[in-house]
Image (tube, rainbow, N blue to C red; front, side, top):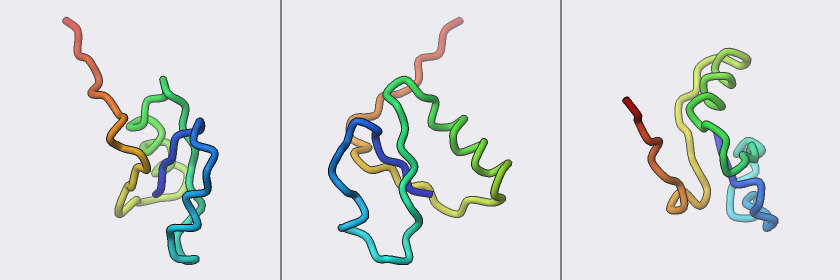
Length: 64
């Protein structure tokens, strides 16, 4: 599964082989774990999750 920020307008696919699946865009506030879990429910097992521009992700805050 390939995730890319929706705000990123450049094509990620030009850097990837043609066998790579189409990237799924995500919004800034979107829960990526929920997105992956939803994909698993719809399509079955996911063997790898790649996130383009992952350096801009932040950790989820845990409150008490």
